[in-house]
Length: 330
Ligand code: SAM
Ligand code: SF4
Image (cartoon, rainbow, N blue to C red; front, top):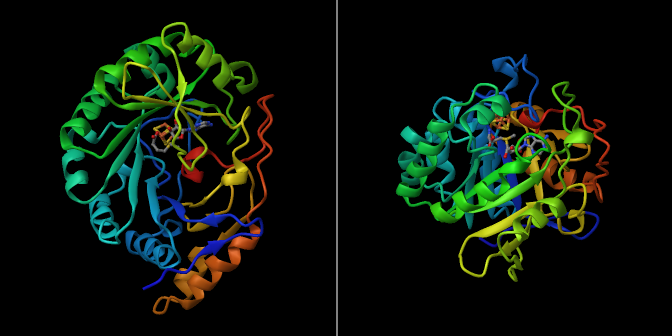
Protein backbone atom coordinates (compact mmCIF):
# COMPACT_ATOMS: atom_id res chain seq x y z
CA UNK A 1 0.00 0.00 0.00
CA UNK A 2 1.53 3.37 -0.94
CA UNK A 3 1.90 5.41 2.22
CA UNK A 4 0.27 8.78 2.69
CA UNK A 5 2.59 11.59 3.74
CA UNK A 6 2.46 14.01 6.62
CA UNK A 7 3.64 17.43 5.47
CA UNK A 8 3.56 20.74 7.32
CA UNK A 9 3.10 24.35 6.15
CA UNK A 10 6.84 24.77 5.66
CA UNK A 11 7.17 21.80 3.30
CA UNK A 12 8.75 19.52 5.91
CA UNK A 13 7.75 15.85 5.77
CA UNK A 14 7.13 14.28 9.16
CA UNK A 15 8.16 10.62 9.14
CA UNK A 16 9.57 10.21 12.65
CA UNK A 17 7.49 9.87 15.82
CA UNK A 18 8.68 9.70 19.40
CA UNK A 19 6.17 8.02 21.67
CA UNK A 20 6.40 8.47 25.40
CA UNK A 21 5.22 5.32 27.15
CA UNK A 22 5.37 6.57 30.75
CA UNK A 23 6.10 9.74 32.72
CA UNK A 24 7.54 7.65 35.57
CA UNK A 25 11.18 6.90 36.16
CA UNK A 26 13.48 5.17 38.64
CA UNK A 27 15.95 8.10 38.35
CA UNK A 28 15.46 11.79 39.16
CA UNK A 29 18.09 13.44 36.94
CA UNK A 30 18.69 17.02 38.05
CA UNK A 31 18.14 18.51 34.57
CA UNK A 32 14.99 16.51 33.89
CA UNK A 33 12.91 16.29 37.05
CA UNK A 34 12.28 17.93 40.36
CA UNK A 35 13.27 15.75 43.31
CA UNK A 36 9.69 15.45 44.41
CA UNK A 37 7.60 14.70 41.33
CA UNK A 38 3.88 14.04 41.06
CA UNK A 39 3.11 11.52 38.34
CA UNK A 40 -0.04 11.17 36.30
CA UNK A 41 -3.00 9.15 37.52
CA UNK A 42 -3.48 5.94 35.55
CA UNK A 43 -6.67 6.91 33.70
CA UNK A 44 -4.88 9.87 32.10
CA UNK A 45 -2.15 7.64 30.73
CA UNK A 46 -2.64 5.89 27.38
CA UNK A 47 -2.94 2.12 27.58
CA UNK A 48 -0.37 0.05 25.69
CA UNK A 49 -3.13 -0.83 23.20
CA UNK A 50 -3.81 2.86 22.63
CA UNK A 51 -0.10 3.55 22.11
CA UNK A 52 0.10 0.67 19.61
CA UNK A 53 -2.98 2.00 17.80
CA UNK A 54 -1.35 5.41 17.53
CA UNK A 55 1.87 3.86 16.22
CA UNK A 56 -0.05 1.83 13.62
CA UNK A 57 -1.87 4.92 12.36
CA UNK A 58 1.29 7.00 12.17
CA UNK A 59 2.83 4.19 10.11
CA UNK A 60 -0.24 4.24 7.82
CA UNK A 61 0.50 7.97 7.37
CA UNK A 62 4.08 7.43 6.27
CA UNK A 63 6.01 7.17 9.54
CA UNK A 64 9.19 5.18 9.00
CA UNK A 65 10.87 5.69 12.31
CA UNK A 66 9.54 5.29 15.85
CA UNK A 67 11.36 5.86 19.11
CA UNK A 68 9.89 4.79 22.44
CA UNK A 69 10.86 7.03 25.32
CA UNK A 70 9.57 8.49 28.57
CA UNK A 71 10.12 8.84 31.55
CA UNK A 72 11.93 5.56 31.65
CA UNK A 73 10.27 3.27 29.08
CA UNK A 74 11.59 0.11 30.74
CA UNK A 75 9.71 0.75 34.00
CA UNK A 76 6.36 0.52 32.17
CA UNK A 77 4.82 -2.86 32.91
CA UNK A 78 4.47 -5.12 29.84
CA UNK A 79 6.60 -2.80 27.70
CA UNK A 80 7.93 -5.89 25.87
CA UNK A 81 4.44 -6.56 24.50
CA UNK A 82 4.35 -3.09 22.96
CA UNK A 83 7.83 -3.55 21.51
CA UNK A 84 6.81 -6.91 20.04
CA UNK A 85 3.69 -5.37 18.47
CA UNK A 86 5.40 -2.27 17.01
CA UNK A 87 8.23 -4.55 15.85
CA UNK A 88 5.80 -6.08 13.33
CA UNK A 89 5.02 -2.74 11.61
CA UNK A 90 7.91 -2.94 9.15
CA UNK A 91 9.64 0.24 10.33
CA UNK A 92 12.89 1.36 8.74
CA UNK A 93 14.05 2.30 12.24
CA UNK A 94 12.70 1.25 15.64
CA UNK A 95 14.57 2.62 18.65
CA UNK A 96 14.32 3.36 22.35
CA UNK A 97 15.89 5.90 24.69
CA UNK A 98 16.59 4.48 28.13
CA UNK A 99 18.59 5.23 31.26
CA UNK A 100 19.93 1.67 31.03
CA UNK A 101 19.08 0.59 34.58
CA UNK A 102 16.85 -2.31 33.45
CA UNK A 103 19.00 -3.41 30.52
CA UNK A 104 20.97 -6.09 32.40
CA UNK A 105 17.79 -8.20 32.48
CA UNK A 106 15.89 -6.79 29.50
CA UNK A 107 18.37 -6.09 26.67
CA UNK A 108 18.18 -9.52 25.11
CA UNK A 109 14.36 -9.72 25.22
CA UNK A 110 14.09 -6.25 23.71
CA UNK A 111 16.34 -7.20 20.82
CA UNK A 112 14.42 -10.43 20.25
CA UNK A 113 11.13 -8.49 20.36
CA UNK A 114 12.30 -6.47 17.34
CA UNK A 115 13.83 -3.32 18.79
CA UNK A 116 16.70 -2.26 16.53
CA UNK A 117 18.59 0.54 18.24
CA UNK A 118 19.16 1.89 21.73
CA UNK A 119 20.16 5.29 23.07
CA UNK A 120 21.46 4.94 26.61
CA UNK A 121 21.95 7.98 28.83
CA UNK A 122 25.29 8.17 30.61
CA UNK A 123 26.39 11.42 32.21
CA UNK A 124 29.30 10.25 34.35
CA UNK A 125 31.69 7.35 34.86
CA UNK A 126 32.26 8.27 38.49
CA UNK A 127 29.80 6.44 40.76
CA UNK A 128 29.38 9.38 43.17
CA UNK A 129 28.94 11.97 40.45
CA UNK A 130 26.56 9.64 38.63
CA UNK A 131 24.51 9.31 41.80
CA UNK A 132 24.54 13.08 42.34
CA UNK A 133 23.28 13.79 38.81
CA UNK A 134 20.64 11.05 38.70
CA UNK A 135 19.86 11.39 42.45
CA UNK A 136 18.95 7.67 42.66
CA UNK A 137 20.91 5.91 39.91
CA UNK A 138 23.47 3.15 40.32
CA UNK A 139 26.35 3.47 37.85
CA UNK A 140 27.43 -0.18 37.87
CA UNK A 141 23.92 -1.30 36.95
CA UNK A 142 23.95 1.03 33.92
CA UNK A 143 27.44 -0.10 32.88
CA UNK A 144 26.23 -3.72 33.06
CA UNK A 145 23.24 -2.63 31.00
CA UNK A 146 25.50 -1.20 28.30
CA UNK A 147 27.41 -4.48 28.14
CA UNK A 148 24.15 -6.45 27.99
CA UNK A 149 22.99 -4.27 25.10
CA UNK A 150 26.26 -4.90 23.23
CA UNK A 151 25.96 -8.63 23.79
CA UNK A 152 22.35 -8.61 22.56
CA UNK A 153 23.51 -7.41 19.13
CA UNK A 154 21.61 -4.17 18.62
CA UNK A 155 22.08 -2.58 15.21
CA UNK A 156 23.21 0.63 16.87
CA UNK A 157 23.94 1.79 20.39
CA UNK A 158 24.51 5.41 21.24
CA UNK A 159 25.32 7.03 24.56
CA UNK A 160 23.68 10.37 25.43
CA UNK A 161 25.47 12.77 27.75
CA UNK A 162 23.98 16.04 28.96
CA UNK A 163 27.01 18.22 29.70
CA UNK A 164 26.88 20.61 32.66
CA UNK A 165 29.67 22.92 33.80
CA UNK A 166 31.10 21.92 37.14
CA UNK A 167 29.23 18.61 37.10
CA UNK A 168 30.57 16.41 34.36
CA UNK A 169 32.35 18.66 31.84
CA UNK A 170 35.71 17.48 33.22
CA UNK A 171 34.81 13.92 32.27
CA UNK A 172 34.41 14.49 28.54
CA UNK A 173 37.78 12.85 27.66
CA UNK A 174 36.97 9.76 29.80
CA UNK A 175 33.52 9.44 28.26
CA UNK A 176 35.08 9.56 24.78
CA UNK A 177 37.61 6.85 25.72
CA UNK A 178 34.78 4.74 27.15
CA UNK A 179 32.77 5.04 23.91
CA UNK A 180 35.85 4.10 21.86
CA UNK A 181 36.58 1.12 24.07
CA UNK A 182 32.97 -0.13 23.93
CA UNK A 183 32.65 0.71 20.23
CA UNK A 184 29.46 2.69 20.68
CA UNK A 185 28.57 6.16 19.40
CA UNK A 186 28.23 9.07 21.81
CA UNK A 187 26.28 12.35 21.66
CA UNK A 188 26.82 15.36 23.86
CA UNK A 189 23.68 17.37 24.57
CA UNK A 190 23.28 20.98 25.66
CA UNK A 191 20.82 21.22 28.53
CA UNK A 192 17.44 22.54 27.43
CA UNK A 193 15.12 24.80 29.44
CA UNK A 194 12.33 22.27 29.90
CA UNK A 195 10.48 22.34 33.21
CA UNK A 196 11.32 24.56 36.16
CA UNK A 197 14.14 23.15 38.26
CA UNK A 198 15.69 24.63 41.38
CA UNK A 199 18.67 22.31 41.70
CA UNK A 200 21.02 24.36 39.52
CA UNK A 201 21.14 27.49 37.39
CA UNK A 202 20.84 26.33 33.81
CA UNK A 203 22.34 29.53 32.46
CA UNK A 204 25.52 29.00 34.50
CA UNK A 205 25.68 25.23 33.86
CA UNK A 206 25.34 25.49 30.08
CA UNK A 207 28.35 23.94 28.36
CA UNK A 208 28.06 24.61 24.64
CA UNK A 209 28.83 22.00 22.01
CA UNK A 210 31.63 24.25 20.78
CA UNK A 211 33.28 24.03 24.21
CA UNK A 212 32.85 20.24 24.27
CA UNK A 213 34.40 19.93 20.79
CA UNK A 214 37.35 22.08 21.86
CA UNK A 215 37.94 19.77 24.84
CA UNK A 216 37.82 16.65 22.65
CA UNK A 217 40.14 18.22 20.07
CA UNK A 218 42.87 18.37 22.69
CA UNK A 219 42.93 14.54 22.48
CA UNK A 220 41.48 13.60 19.07
CA UNK A 221 41.03 15.12 15.67
CA UNK A 222 37.32 15.51 14.85
CA UNK A 223 36.36 15.10 11.21
CA UNK A 224 32.83 16.19 10.24
CA UNK A 225 30.91 13.08 9.16
CA UNK A 226 29.57 13.32 5.64
CA UNK A 227 26.37 11.36 6.16
CA UNK A 228 23.34 13.36 7.19
CA UNK A 229 21.71 12.03 10.34
CA UNK A 230 18.43 13.69 9.34
CA UNK A 231 18.15 14.82 12.94
CA UNK A 232 19.34 17.59 15.18
CA UNK A 233 22.70 15.97 15.96
CA UNK A 234 25.82 16.95 14.03
CA UNK A 235 28.27 14.06 13.80
CA UNK A 236 32.04 13.82 13.69
CA UNK A 237 34.48 10.93 13.44
CA UNK A 238 37.96 10.42 14.82
CA UNK A 239 40.63 9.29 12.33
CA UNK A 240 41.38 6.03 14.15
CA UNK A 241 37.92 4.85 15.17
CA UNK A 242 34.52 3.93 13.74
CA UNK A 243 32.84 5.63 16.69
CA UNK A 244 30.74 8.68 15.83
CA UNK A 245 30.65 11.69 18.14
CA UNK A 246 27.44 13.71 17.94
CA UNK A 247 26.47 17.13 19.25
CA UNK A 248 22.92 18.18 19.96
CA UNK A 249 23.02 21.92 20.34
CA UNK A 250 19.59 23.53 20.68
CA UNK A 251 21.19 26.76 21.88
CA UNK A 252 23.96 27.20 19.38
CA UNK A 253 22.68 25.39 16.28
CA UNK A 254 19.16 25.76 15.05
CA UNK A 255 18.08 22.51 13.44
CA UNK A 256 14.43 23.39 12.89
CA UNK A 257 14.48 23.77 9.10
CA UNK A 258 15.03 20.04 8.60
CA UNK A 259 12.82 18.87 11.48
CA UNK A 260 11.04 15.66 10.52
CA UNK A 261 9.62 14.65 13.89
CA UNK A 262 6.72 14.97 16.27
CA UNK A 263 6.19 13.61 19.77
CA UNK A 264 3.25 12.09 21.60
CA UNK A 265 3.15 12.40 25.39
CA UNK A 266 1.94 9.54 27.53
CA UNK A 267 -1.37 11.40 27.90
CA UNK A 268 -1.80 11.25 24.13
CA UNK A 269 -0.94 14.88 23.49
CA UNK A 270 0.65 15.27 20.06
CA UNK A 271 3.46 17.83 20.41
CA UNK A 272 4.47 19.45 17.19
CA UNK A 273 7.72 20.96 18.51
CA UNK A 274 9.96 20.27 21.50
CA UNK A 275 10.38 24.00 22.14
CA UNK A 276 6.76 25.16 21.75
CA UNK A 277 3.47 24.37 23.41
CA UNK A 278 1.46 23.71 20.19
CA UNK A 279 -0.35 20.41 20.65
CA UNK A 280 -3.42 18.33 19.83
CA UNK A 281 -5.27 16.00 22.20
CA UNK A 282 -5.22 12.62 20.45
CA UNK A 283 -6.42 10.75 23.55
CA UNK A 284 -9.83 12.40 23.14
CA UNK A 285 -9.98 11.20 19.53
CA UNK A 286 -8.70 7.70 20.41
CA UNK A 287 -11.26 7.25 23.19
CA UNK A 288 -14.08 9.02 21.31
CA UNK A 289 -13.65 6.75 18.27
CA UNK A 290 -12.62 3.37 19.60
CA UNK A 291 -13.49 1.32 16.52
CA UNK A 292 -12.53 3.15 13.34
CA UNK A 293 -9.34 5.06 12.64
CA UNK A 294 -10.41 7.69 10.08
CA UNK A 295 -11.04 10.46 12.65
CA UNK A 296 -7.71 9.72 14.29
CA UNK A 297 -5.83 9.94 10.99
CA UNK A 298 -7.71 13.14 10.11
CA UNK A 299 -6.70 14.69 13.45
CA UNK A 300 -3.05 13.77 12.88
CA UNK A 301 -3.04 15.16 9.33
CA UNK A 302 -4.73 18.40 10.45
CA UNK A 303 -2.29 18.79 13.35
CA UNK A 304 0.58 19.23 10.88
CA UNK A 305 -0.70 22.77 10.17
CA UNK A 306 0.18 23.65 13.77
CA UNK A 307 3.83 22.68 13.52
CA UNK A 308 5.78 25.88 14.28
CA UNK A 309 8.62 27.00 12.06
CA UNK A 310 11.21 26.92 14.84
CA UNK A 311 11.91 26.88 18.56
CA UNK A 312 13.20 29.90 20.48
CA UNK A 313 15.31 28.49 23.30
CA UNK A 314 17.49 31.14 24.87
CA UNK A 315 20.67 30.35 26.72
CA UNK A 316 20.12 32.36 29.90
CA UNK A 317 18.53 29.37 31.56
CA UNK A 318 15.04 30.84 31.70
CA UNK A 319 12.28 28.28 31.49
CA UNK A 320 10.33 28.75 28.32
CA UNK A 321 8.52 25.46 28.42
CA UNK A 322 6.83 24.40 31.59
CA UNK A 323 6.66 20.72 30.65
CA UNK A 324 9.41 18.60 32.17
CA UNK A 325 11.37 16.44 29.75
CA UNK A 326 9.86 13.29 31.28
CA UNK A 327 6.45 14.57 30.15
CA UNK A 328 7.66 15.56 26.71
CA UNK A 329 9.40 12.32 25.86
CA UNK A 330 13.06 13.13 25.20
N1 SAM B 1 14.74 7.89 30.75
C1 SAM B 1 15.32 7.77 29.46
C2 SAM B 1 16.72 8.33 29.45
O1 SAM B 1 17.10 9.02 30.39
O2 SAM B 1 17.43 8.08 28.48
C3 SAM B 1 14.50 8.37 28.34
C4 SAM B 1 13.83 9.69 28.61
S1 SAM B 1 14.92 11.05 28.87
C5 SAM B 1 13.78 12.37 29.11
C6 SAM B 1 15.59 11.28 27.22
C7 SAM B 1 16.83 12.12 27.11
O3 SAM B 1 16.53 13.45 27.43
C8 SAM B 1 17.95 11.68 28.01
O4 SAM B 1 19.11 11.44 27.24
C9 SAM B 1 18.15 12.87 28.93
O5 SAM B 1 19.50 13.00 29.26
C10 SAM B 1 17.64 13.99 28.09
N2 SAM B 1 17.18 15.16 28.85
C11 SAM B 1 16.31 15.21 29.89
N3 SAM B 1 16.11 16.48 30.30
C12 SAM B 1 16.86 17.27 29.51
C13 SAM B 1 17.10 18.67 29.44
N4 SAM B 1 16.50 19.54 30.25
N5 SAM B 1 17.95 19.11 28.48
C14 SAM B 1 18.56 18.26 27.63
N6 SAM B 1 18.39 16.92 27.64
C15 SAM B 1 17.56 16.43 28.58
FE1 SF4 C 1 14.49 9.57 34.20
FE2 SF4 C 1 15.54 9.84 31.79
FE3 SF4 C 1 14.54 11.97 33.08
FE4 SF4 C 1 16.76 10.86 33.96
S1 SF4 C 1 16.50 11.85 31.96
S2 SF4 C 1 14.99 11.46 35.22
S3 SF4 C 1 16.47 8.76 33.52
S4 SF4 C 1 13.41 10.25 32.35
